[in-house]
Every structure is written in C-alpha cells, then in structure tokens.
Image 1 (cartoon, rainbow, N blue to C red):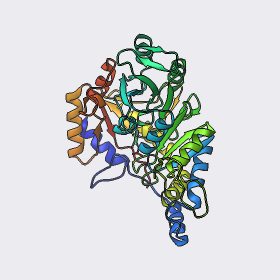
Image 2: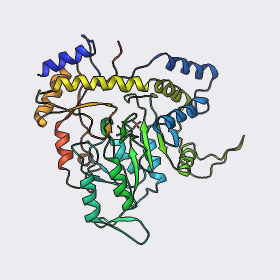
Image 3: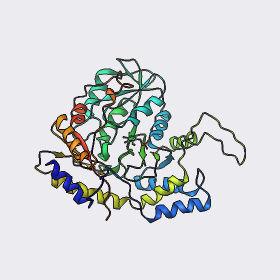
Image 4: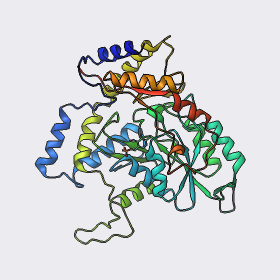
Length: 382
Ligand SMILES: Cc1ncc(COP(=O)(O)O)c(C=O)c1O
C-alpha cells in the first residue's frame, strides 16, 4: 500500500525524479508584472498602491467589511488579541492541536493559553469540551468579564483554528463565547477560501486573521491580514501596526507604542496577482482531494474529507493512520521515497513553554496527533 501511494503521488504530479513537496506555491505572469511595477516605480516598501488594493480584494472575497494587511499571520494574531484587551494575567482559550503561532501570539500579549480539546470530526476546537469547561469552571463577575475559577484569571478571548483549511463549528463557538462575554478571534491562517454554512471563515468572530506565508493557498511570500466588521477595530489595527504615527506631511509624531507590522508593497503586489487565481487554486485542490479520496477508499487509511455545512479549501490534505506506529512507518517510507509528508504539530501542551498551561482532557487531540499525516497538496500545473 505504501509503495502504491508513492507511485500514485508521482503519477498525479507527473514527477519521476526528485522530491515532491508538501505545498509549493504556483505563480503566473502577473506576479512578475506587478513586482516589476513596484521596482520600476521605486515603491517597494510601505507606500504604494498594492497594499490597499490587496486589502480591497480580500474584503470583497471574504465579505469582511474591513481588512488590514500585516507583515505575517502571527503578527496579525498578536494585534487582534491585543486589541481585544488581552494582557498580563489574562487567559485565552485555544486548542493544543495547532501551529505554534497561535500560542505564541497569546504569549506576546503576556496572556496564557488554556487548551480546549479538539473535535475529531472537524479537527478544530471541540464545542462540547468548550461548553463543559465554561459551565464547570467559570463565572461572570460584576465587571462583566468571565473568570476562570481554577486560576482566578480573566478569560479575555478564544482563538479557534480552522485546521488545514477545514472549518470548525465556528457558529456554535461564537454563540457560546458571546454567552460568556469572551471575544472570538478566528485563526483562519490556513483557510482562505473555506466557508462554513456559506460564510467565509474568519468572518464569524470579532476578528479573523489570514496568513499568506509561502506554503499557503495564496502567498505574498510572507504576509497576513486582519479581517473584521468592526470599523473602530480596523482603524486601531491599521494605526498600531503602522508605528502609531499621526498623519502629517513632515512631522514624526507617534501617539502610542506602535508596531512596524506593515506589509510591503512588494508583498501585496504578489498577493494581488495570486488572488486573481484563487478560484483556479480552489478547484484544482478540490480535484486533487477527490483523487486522494478515491485512492484511499477501502485502503484501511482514512482520507479526511470536508464535513457537513463546510466548504474546505483543502489546503493541506490529511490522512489518518491506525496508530502512532503506523503513522511513523508511513512517514518514514514516504519521505525516504521522495514524497514529502509530515505529522501534525506536536501538541502545544507538550512543548516546554506551554507544558504548565491549563488544559481540558485532551483525548481527541492526542488521538489525532497519533494518526494525522499531511500529504502533498500543491496545486498541479502541467
Ligand atoms: C494555524 C496557523 N496560525 C497562524 C499561522 C501564522 O502565520 P504566519 O506564518 O503568516 O505568521 C499559521 C501559519 O503559518 C498557521 O498555520
């Protein structure tokens, strides 16, 4: 079976020699053209038309009212949490099965993550475990905020993640959190193009963030975006990510400690060109997922498919092996045979920086960690 898989991947990518990557970007002519325009006009840095054009394209595409381009998705998360008030002694609910940036952005605010278990059906945060945690362990105090009765800390926000582009049950999570006055910041870094009940991921909570890292469905090289329907939030995000400079033709006045988290015109130029092909990327990846689904049918290995109410961008295709041993055997065989595959991230609570964080029972996250393998998912162009 494993060698059939290797042959199958080589065949669908029409590559006989060399490595097949997990996710390589695909560029067409306009990336070059728009980059050349930046260079020819000298607008390579923070000034230039492409940043606002890219923000407008993302707004129109996701349906968010406002979009603020940021240097990367991690910084976008940092700012989205900070603007929701995350600070020292606060806690942020999130999940242990995610990329490190989710936890790190919480730490940048001097807040502490609390890890809620995952949902085996969606790979995202488990609604049931979240509800149980909130019911059993929290209270709303006179100041209107939700407090954790175990740690006595304020729970200021919740960051659910749409893992590998598969939407989590975001409507239920937002509903629950609003009952407890907890702001939801959606980590939609991996899910540009994915929808839940017809609505784009990242547009359910107070704010959402996207990533345009080189391995994402649409890349700017490095880049991120905050999306929100809250005008004040968007204005604040723009201000503090652009060094909090008060607009003036020549004076340098900054009215608070800001960040240099701006996206450059060069990066945004690439993003504008990439977004012209988002429908092609989505369709191409959906076809690839269909081929994998058929290949793994009745094979004893589960291919992870999109669930009811979800439209997935199938950013990274995932399979589930029977146990950790089989997972490791599969990883070894495929990587030794030039097919790049990788396991899910080590759970956050197993990393030394986060090992003392409070968690719910993480039976599902552990189960998934033992079984998930990501397989090559690049758009195929011949
Ligand atoms: C779930 C998740 N959150 C956040 C990020 C951070 O995005 P970036 O790499 O653009 O900083 C990524 C990806 O890279 C991610 O996969």
